[in-house]
Image 1 (cartoon, rainbow, N blue to C red):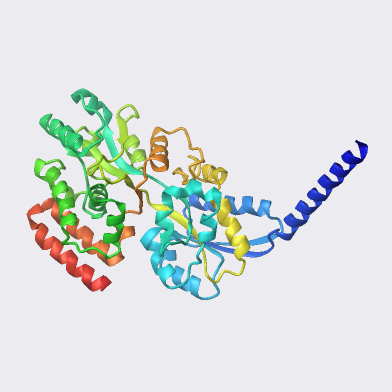
Image 2: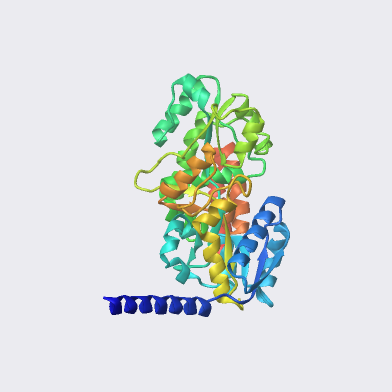
Length: 419
């Protein structure tokens, strides 16, 4: 027995030594160059903290972090990736990364996404995929949905709608009470884009919506017209506040705060403003945009910030390891906490702060967004197409009878841009 124990002990020692040798062989060293656009105070602190934590894990690695102004980075990124590129950069998902994928400036990291740990990021895989390959990783996002006056719903005996029919019935009851169903400020156009995203994806599905965003579908297609027909049901009811084209999104908030409108389709960043306006969490609540076509799964607007590896990266091993670290459950819990980014982790195994809107958003995006994650109209569509498109969407909301002219104009723009 003694000789057997000795053999086991020797085997264990040899195994530990081999593991240590393997760890040494894969230890990260050299330089890791990162350019980040997390320039505002809270995001900057988050970025600097991530680099410090990663450095502590890999003491032999020299990390060079450069933080640039977020707006300036939008014009600098192409040059930065082209000449003496860094290893890792910040950017955005979906169509916003397409120019750099097409130009061969972002590295294909499909091998990372094939690792089991990346299954926890499944909600955003579609948004990180072009040509069947993955080109980056997400580190934060936030939900969109319908924020509503729970106290008004309770006064009128209404429940959160799950279907379009229930949405329309609720809206009629709200109108009958002398209120508007929705506030919106479309002066700066993008809020109308949110309504289109939801009604189109709920009518035709995520894949169709992204195909339209990619220029593959004509704006005069009957399926697009059905989206506008569904939208017009609300417009013809008088569901939206009057003269919304004269208000910014913030200027439209008092209609809901004062109880003149019952709901707002908006991003979670609006919650702070609602609370500052005087609404309590007992008065304010949130629901997922309802089903229109039961044959399509829920797709959600959740603008996603990302990290990418430059195709010219000099330290690919360290860059990939940094992306594994960025997407880990523990790190995403830490960086998205209320005292950091105050948003949602993409990793479904992360945890979130004790805030009911973050909790509802995390549950929705992690477990009930099987259709896919949209990046929002002005991120998913080509920049010029988005600009012309949102002008048309706002015009439709004010003058719905102009639809044929609007769609013809959008289709002419699509053909010029994509063909």
